[in-house]
View 1: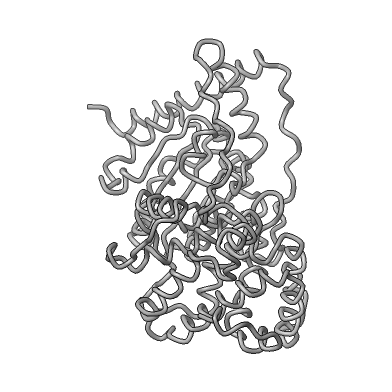
View 2 (view 1 turned 90 degrees about the horizontal axis):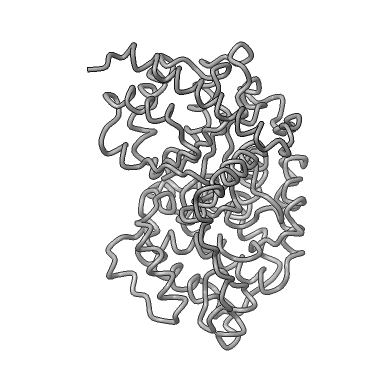
Length: 427
């Protein structure tokens, strides 16, 4: 039986092998450039963990396809060990996760870039795993380890006595970035340039002896009944001018009747395949009866996924920078600013937004029971209402998005009071 000490030595050997293989690959593919100087992570210097956060090791990039918060850890962003206090890193990890662990969440771990010069000690890894108690593990629904090496597998054996079988089932190894498309909204990911180049090298080496992956066929034209992944205007045109998309009106109607007092509504996910099946029913124009699923969180996830899959966010791309400016406005003037901002969105978007926020305001009024006050709802819905036209939402950008959305919900009557809607589109 291999001792823990032997396993640690084996892990060190495997890590050094990884480094040597990487150097050989880079030598064979000399046309790939070295890593550029790292860009600033954009973290405010007042951040309580600025010394760690400034490296960009951790990113929160919105939700995955099934309504779960998406958190990314990039080893290549870790500086040499003498430049990073690993105890502070652990505290920063817990500080960040504490904001999201009450909801379901997903972690993507980019292993490339972990070296003997920047890796934490194995003792630290053991202690870190113990620090992340049930509160953190229970709502972690998936852990994707990208570009795993033998070091990862050895490390897994070292930690195996500590890791429960249930937690182990959440782990998925991802050998190439393209495989993430099967699990996540790839465009939402914040992928460091070093990881992208490493993936290019791996694919270049692979081409020498392995057939290339099957090309993804071009997307088909949307069906006339399509609901997910098409614009609001498309849905309206195909549904005889209906102002509120059927998915939105049906989920809101059901949740209004059955879910207003459900604790943690919108914080939980549902079975991935079930969500895919329901989306398919909607896209085929077939009826959906939420009662048959026996889970109030199913329509909640469907509502969020509908918003997230719009080609353009409900608050529109042009307003993204204006929404970011909310933190520069005095608190007493923010409601007025929000009101002015949303008056600039197209009429149809405004109608749909008012319908949705009216419902979320109702949810917030039951917060004593459902624990979903405006700020909690904003943490869930902000990244589903607006995102940048290119790339994904950065950790720094989340705060203004959340503030803006919380004001929309809390001050619904004031923000939307100046423009009335037809009675038939009110929730």
